[in-house]
Image (tube, rainbow, N blue to C red; front, side):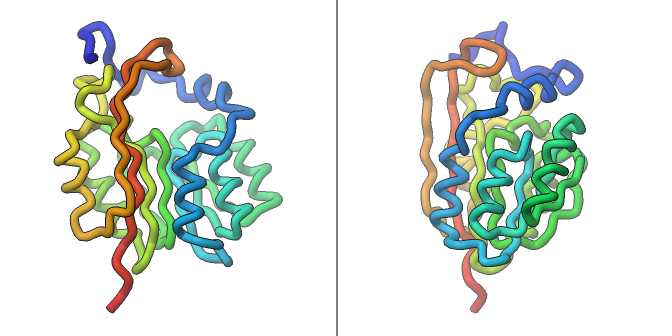
Length: 205
């Protein structure tokens, strides 16, 4: 469980460039495949991905017909995203979620293993921006970290099950899978406590 020696690294200590480089060649995350299955074919609709890394999920969305707006704070992923944008309807921005940027209205919003790295004092503003970007009927697919995660108590945002559910008030919760296990992170062994969330904005009317 949570160990005093294990804390989410502060922003100055995080090397997302090395992390993103190590992700090259991995498969599409299950949350992204579940989101596209739930949302159906993109058919030119707009998807937004927060924390896109090298664009593995970004490409998956584009291949399923979505026009994708991707954001990531790590400037080193820019060349990979520009290459993808030359082949697919993708627009990429380098932007920190700590200072919530304007978010494009969308029919699908995806954020895999990214939101927990936003500091708690900044999270509410970001979440308000996320909720505000969801068009009627839009699918929301996000990962959150739980309070029993090894990194809980560090420089990030962690939620109890009740807090996670409260974030989804007013949405149709399609699935919220809570997982707790010992495994590995990029930095080494880690106890994980996560929530994988799929929800839908109510349709208009």
